[in-house]
Length: 253
Image 1 (cartoon, rainbow, N blue to C red):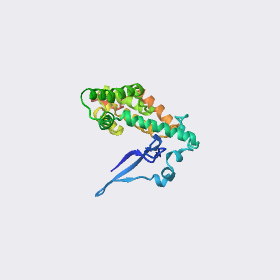
Image 2: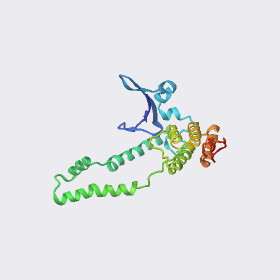
Image 3: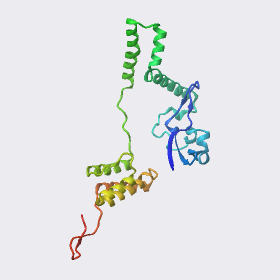
Image 4: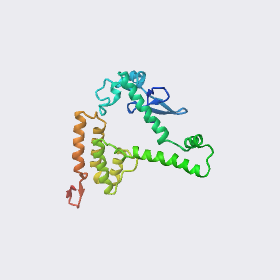
């Protein structure tokens, strides 16, 4: 038994060293295997196949890659070698950290300690004023500065095309279960609705081929084109069906 575990590896110390700054590029995945009598054991070949990723960190190891920070052309991380800009970036992050700590994550314990320092023993009118300041003002500021629509989750073209096939089958009465792997789903569709078995097996095969190829490779583009074509033209499995004793047979459309 094995499983994939996702988390982070590495990070960057803040300017004063009081916390660790973890970037999206520090995301890391490794494998774990189950050993009888020992439980889950980590199996991570990164230190062997890419030692720079461990010793230097993601930013240094990936700095020479063309895709690194490709979606953030104005990121100050590109100018890490410039001392002034590097300090500016860390200062900006420290302000964002302070905002998250004292406004977004301003819990009850912190509120009470701060109010006690300001107002001493709180009773009656003083308590009402203190509560108004502690809750209303920060909430109003937080609402004005942080209120925004949640970002839409971006799907790869292959996933989008495959999910459309799943939606079509769901409308036909064979919905994909939560967490059901595509191959398991295709096998169940073939059992429950044999007339769609060949089609969903072909779709699943092409989906795997498209999804797990290098994104910009010719093979991935060709597989995605084939997936779109198969998704637009669902077909039934072609099985010979005898209709009478004379041996007459027909193929369903």
